[in-house]
Image 1: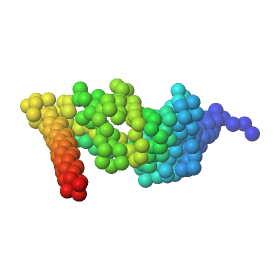
Image 2: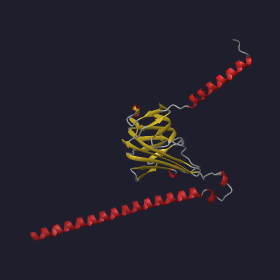
Image 3: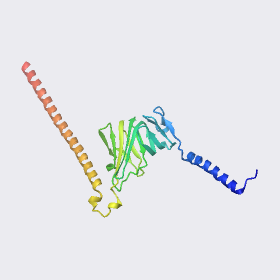
Image 4: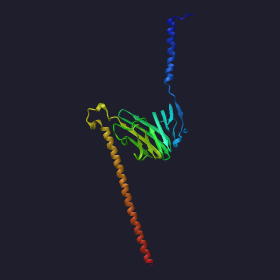
Length: 251
């Protein structure tokens, strides 16, 4: 049976409509690779390994230059990280959770993990370390065991590309980053400086209060220790004098 040119064109269009949606679906479908807490991501040459405390998945993972890079990493109960780089040296890392807040005025990141071994833990969240010229110590925090705040340069460092290196931390560790989008907001460029950067100014003020309180507590603790030492020395001397008096009376 002969097929006219118009019929052939019609058939081609119908076949195309049937095939192309399938191609689009397969193109858009993303590979999901699951993992479990028992899975280890080893770093043999630097005596480190990475694992996760919960089940999760990623779309792609590579290991290069002693660093694991995960794309679309998702931990159960946490948000998805588009790109996450992690490494360890003389340390084993167990990652618990990742939290992110990305609203229009405030952005934050929080990673919780446990470190075993006083080595280095290295992370990169794809976030620059600098925020409109602010020192990273104002926008990054590293907290150990819930109450020990490590100082930048004495516990952790960060490079311009956002690679954070935590040194010597053991136990439960939280890495926190926050960014206020009011900095550099062009919509407020005609406002006075204090109104343009009101959130940032308040943040710096609060951080200054926290640091000042911590210093005051430390000073009080030091003074208390000094007083305790003086009282102890006084009591020791008093006891020695009393012993000598008793020995003299016995003679």
